[in-house]
Length: 279
Image 1 (cartoon, rainbow, N blue to C red):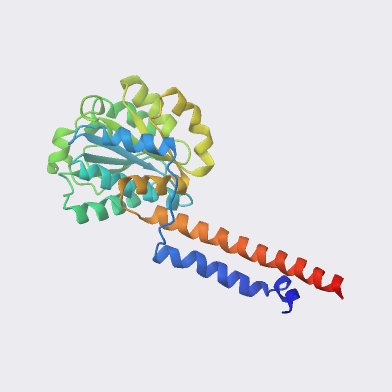
Image 2 (image 1 turned 120 degrees about the vertical axis):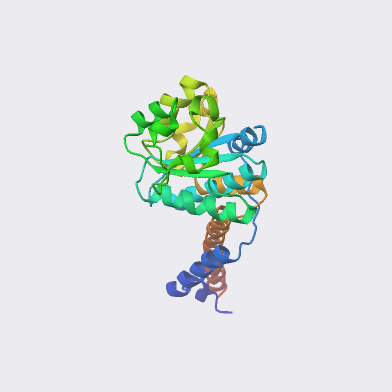
């Protein structure tokens, strides 16, 4: 066998194989196991321990660059919440187009699958400018804070859920925030959850995740999901694999492929050297 060939595999072949190994799991998940971190387990448990029928406020405070790692968190939250017959009220403060649109798409997909109705089981209040001022108003008057309409401009009078949710102080049981910057979890913590002693959880992009650790340790955050890995762990806890676990499969397969080719290259090098020494 010509061992030297293993050292000089065409780089184009390597790229094609890596690409295939990463694309295939996105369409057909392999289901590689993901170890559950304590922080992800806390997120799941704080929601699981809510009384059935509770109201969860979810704010998808993300931009286009980080949405792929945070969107699966919203989908998994919707599955867990609707399974417990909890209600969802959504907002977005970080990006005018990305946050509210993706919030609607990902919750609506789950809602249709699970037989939940917009306006009765969940409402999207959309993007709101001036996050700090809006949050301060919504603490005692949600309707005034959002101008009395949802993200499409439909009056809140049309939605039975919003007859129940008039203020965050009295009518919301937990805040779930996906965050990539400011406004984000820190804004919610400062103006809503700490003054009202409301539980706050959610998830952050991986680049921000290290910054939330001391808030988790202090109890100001009830666990927190970290990037795509955190989303995959949450999906596994909810019991419904989705984009998070598919993304982790793709990453894992890409890493495994690179390691295999590194191993083959090293085997080829040492075997070829051994053969030359014998000659």
